[in-house]
Amino acid sequence: MILDYFAVGLGGFLGAILRYIVRAWVQRIGAGESGFPLGTLAVNLIGCLIMGLLGGLADSREIFSQQVRLCLFMGLLGSFTTFSTFSYETLALLKAGHFIEACASILLHVIVGLAAVWVGYALTTLP
Image (cartoon, rainbow, N blue to C red; front, side, top):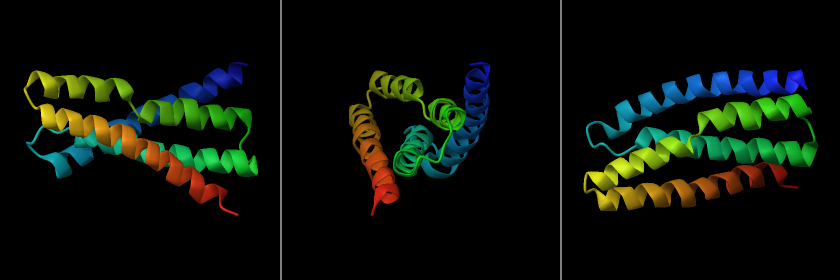
């Protein structure tokens, strides 16, 4: 039981640091001064793809222990991706009158995120 908590905590620690680095880097090189939350979109889509890949491997090959699954899925990827930041940034776009950008952000996160999980999962479960 205590190992489960440690696994989630370790993954969460690493995921939060990775999110900070990747989000800032993508935002700096990709969005510039536009204000579109490209960095948050990137971490969420990358996280969705990795979730699909690892989920497919975990389900089809049963290669991860309980603690590794907790560390990767709940800790690392749960901390790397962020629904609350996506929601806050989308609200900020709406408040600033950027309705089209807010709608684009919502659609990209939800539709492309779901597609990324599906692609990742499919890639690891092909016969």
